[in-house]
Length: 137
Image (cartoon, rainbow, N blue to C red):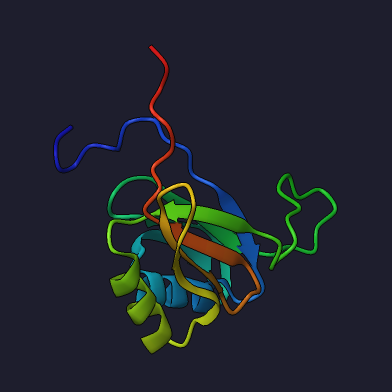
């Protein structure tokens, strides 16, 4: 992969927000996502792409009051588990940015270190070191 090429296929969850621009700022400041692109008209974000530096990312947009919306997702109902190498450093960053921490960093019985936070829209974000099980051969 070259610097200016798109990433290989990955999973990119999507969500809607009442204040999409505010949520983008929060996710960048509190959790370290990187803003890649935002397509908007005024305060309405049609499509935004935020990259998670170790790989993957999320896509989001403003909630729409349109029965024909192909993505009729309600704000505040999203949840994600995001892999990170340094839970304690990310937790400190999130706290400094005003994130609502639901669970402080803790070690799990399956070998992960994790914490759980909620963003200003009410979405839940779990950050941990668990990368999943190896693919069976």
